[in-house]
Image 1 (cartoon, rainbow, N blue to C red):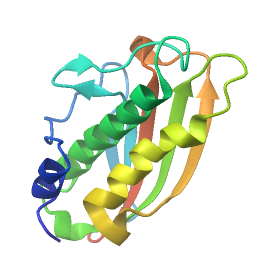
Image 2 (image 1 turned 30 degrees about the horizontal axis):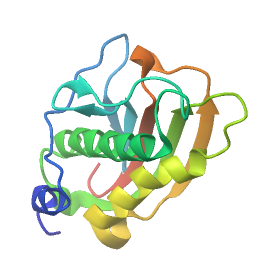
Image 3 (image 1 turned 90 degrees about the vertical axis):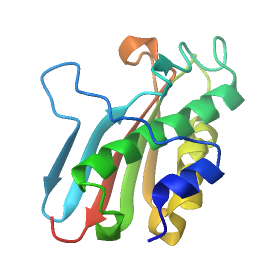
Image 4 (image 1 turned 180 degrees about the vertical axis):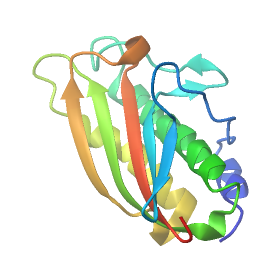
Amino acid sequence: MADIRERLAALGYAMPEPSAAVANYVPWVVTGGQVVVSGQLPFRDGTLAAKGAVPSAVTVEAAKDAAAWCAVNALAQVEQALDGDWDRLERVVRIGVFVCSDAGFAGQAGIANGASDLLVEALGERGRHARAAVGVIALPLGAAVEVELMVAVRGG
């Protein structure tokens, strides 16, 4: 597989250092040929990129961009779980996208496209996945978006 860091750079993203868990959980688990990544927030350069509900505090476009950053952060966790060996990645199986939403807002799928599009652009066909896009009243640290990820891998 082509270097994922180069693909991300071409898309305007830098692979961050994976963040540590902030409570009683682990950032990722390798089990049964899969890597399951805990929910990732839209951190960019160590700062939460989008806080608050969509669309009153965060625009739909900003939330879509935040979802892409969540996916980049999830890929950083996958890279750590695979010890940097991207050739082990078979495909992204599923993502879950949670959007802090104002009452009556029903555009979660469009925001989730930020994460989905990033994964397909960065990983090609291996990035295609099943998905859930869910509106919620609040997310950790006041984030606008959170993304969880499950990938199939060889040798895990």
